[in-house]
Amino acid sequence: MDIGKLMQEMGVRARRAARVLSGTPTGVKDRALEIVAAKLRDSAPILREENAKDIEAGRKEGLSPAMLDRLTLTDGRIEDMARSVEEIISLPDPVGEVTRIWNRPAGFRVGRMRVPIGVIGIIYESRPNVTIDAAALCLKSGNACILRGGSEAIHSNRALAAVFQEGVKGAGLPEDVAQVVPVTDRAAVRALLTMDEQVDLIIPRGGKPLIRMILENSTIPVIKHLDGVCHTYVDAGSDLEMAGQICLNAKLNRPGTCNAMETLLVHTGVAEGFLPGLLERMKEEGVQIRGCPATRKLAPWVQEATDEDWGTEYLDLILSVKVVADMDEAMDHIAEYGSAHTDVIITENHRHAERFVREVDSAAVMVNASSRLHDGFVFGLGAEIGISTDKLHARGPMGLEELTCQKFIVLGEGHLRE
Image (cartoon, rainbow, N blue to C red; front, side):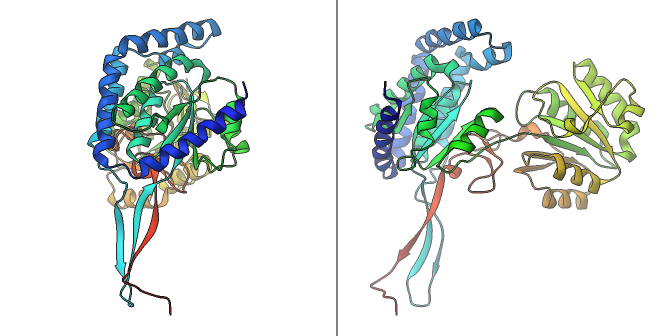
């Protein structure tokens, strides 16, 4: 098989489909998604059957239990995908929105309008639900997409793409609005990354090695999500009971996610009354603690933290803990070791909260709330394509609005440049 030719043909078809979608009314897009949601539920037995092939292959390849869990499609997860599609239907369509318009002295008007980006290449690993989430978000925002999932989920992704394409055809739209790369050869990824005449944007979802490879090889703009080294800072005078609940949730709710707390920073004024009890509770839950000297004085059983620990995204039941002199030291630590993903302050001091929100340079900054809340669905954006730690063009959860850009429109009545 000529992989390069295959990918070019997919790109040409995606570009044609994108032109159709750019002018498709909201009602038609929503009707397509309604059919997709219904077909997901009706196709559950087939989807599970195809998913079982991936699970069996994954076991033979020695995938970890965590990887196999992410790969598995249950009836509940298929239902969740259908509900996610229905959530996207309920959201406002950003395409065509005029975000601002103003009058010029000569009498014409200038405005800015939201439009689709065009064709989006999405490269991801493990979770088959990304196939549906990404395709649905792209459809509603008027974009065609080329989806390249991990080889471990090839049967699941093909089956999900077939269901999605049946849905969009049922609404009279071209099936090429969402295409899954049908081969596992890595040459397909490298070909996709250089298709700058057909593809407008690349969005990767996966581990650091995948994202690094994409950044090094893509000739197309990339919106990336690198590390999620998320911090929680417990300020002096905090409600320590609330702080404890937030910290436990941030670490234990799902430690393998990008928005889980990896480092806990605690003001020295509350450390003695707060840390010993919290760390014992963490220990009971199986968390390995790595702490600074001040932390180890309060809890001698804690392992000594290295400089490498402070900048590590564990994605596991491991937590780094540091006692700091004040909020300035906490923010300095975040600036040096953080990844600009999610950072939290727990405080009763309104001025401290305002300053932390203003000065900490992350995609999401939270006050008295768990870092686990940083999620597109939780934020009310519907499903998300990912969480961007970039600053151009999108930052934080990427929902419908983040899959559009803006163009200028000019409304005149025969106006000429003098």
